[in-house]
Image (tube, rainbow, N blue to C red; front, side, top):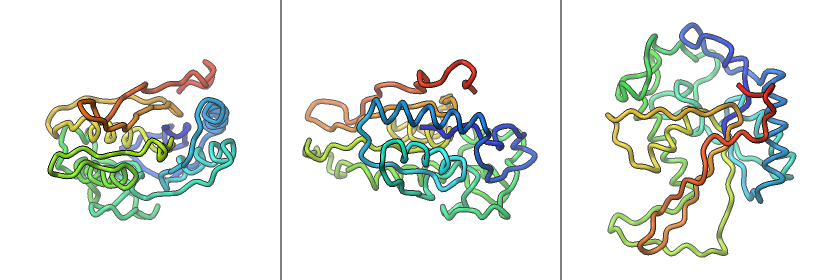
Length: 217
């Protein structure tokens, strides 16, 4: 799930970038999303980016689902971490390179001293592989015990969701497909490796049925 609207989303990110909280509208979006998620899904674990707008959104969902949440720096938005993946303190945050759409120039830093799209994609992949069993390099299938099924909610950023799509669909670095996600838009991906079947299933993307028209951004 993408976070709710933040004050950062109201600014021109080529001029500044800050770790800002949700707007009043963003909190209403997060509350609506929390009610929907808690009523429609049996969430077993909640992870969140360590950026304020995601943490605040995840708190609404965690309370509604009566679960603890786990913050993970690997889920931070692109441009908020050093090339090696360590999070940037707010004082270190830099403007994005003007006219720079990271997926178009995947090996160039998106901020003057920051990470490239491919470095960002690597840390998102590292997170996914820490929660999802990956097939051995031999190509053999994994046996997943259905009793171990989980429904994991990840509260993150539009860029993170785009990187997840690239990981799941094994997209090469030079083909560009943008993934648009609204604030608190939900994406449902299922990992279900079985013989002669795909490992990943996309059930829906950017579901926003929980948002009234006046909450859409």
